[in-house]
Image 1 (cartoon, rainbow, N blue to C red):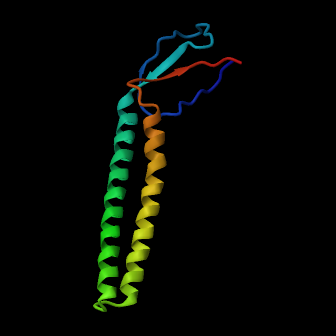
Image 2: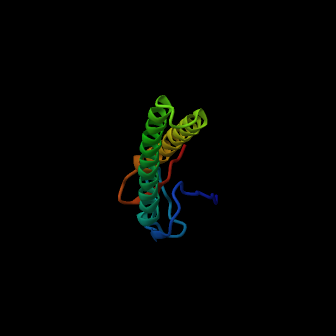
Image 3: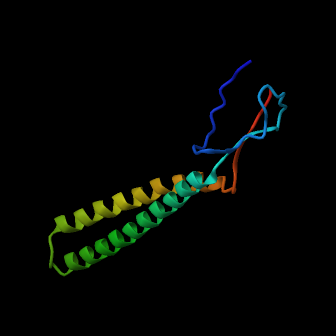
Amino acid sequence: MLSELPPRVAGPIIQIPIKDNQAVRKGDLLFEIDPSTFQAAVDNAQAKLKQAQAAEIQAQQELQRQNELYQTKTNDLRDVQNAEDSYAASVANTAAAQPWKQRASTSNTPRCSLLLMVT
């Protein structure tokens, strides 16, 4: 019986330890995927999170400045509201970046492989 077994991680296959028509059992390694593509995704997710965190800090600082200026009647309420909106958006961007980083780093193994799970 021929079955398609797509991996959860994309990348070039670097090793296929089984031979054609070889019987396989539960737990047998079917193939290994080059981990560099996966590692690049982890690195990218970490960078996006850091970028979002930096933007959040910047937006928080701007909101604080706008509030201080508003209290001294130097700026308009609209400026404060715009800063509040920017800060809220940056908080949401940081929250959105965290699950990607978590998902990408949960399987932080040096090699990606597929094991046959027979039920």
